[in-house]
Length: 207
Image (cartoon, rainbow, N blue to C red; front, side):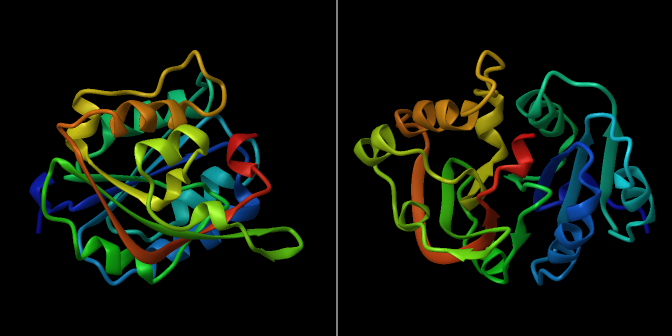
């Protein structure tokens, strides 16, 4: 049976570069989700390790990927958005792991002008971390003081008809986009106290 773009609920976009040490577990965490209609979009920066082999051997049903030189992670994410078919868009680091709460949060997706987000747990090479800034809701004041975790957010694809990641910022372009978005009253923001991802604080995704 041929799949239609309308069948894709959420496009999960993963930017990779020599991510072979982490990617298999990342993809397994996606495959373990119970929500239907997930698409995985991998934008690779020209890896020379086993990353491409892992992608090719993946048995994920809906998978798009490209491997080519890029201008950094935010250029890769912008490319991923253009490749995505989903009504919703989610960005996942190759060294992050989706938790069952991701599917729980996905069950709340309704309004295509609402940004839905949950909480994140953190870890590094030494184990779990306590990091309160990854928890709770963000208003404009809190967001102005602290960057929220990109991986806690499921965006409606309508956001990216209006905004893209600004390549002038080598880091924190996601923060800049969210500052714009939280100031945009045409998009509602809805927080649920659900932990959706295990986030790697060592920063591998930005190497």
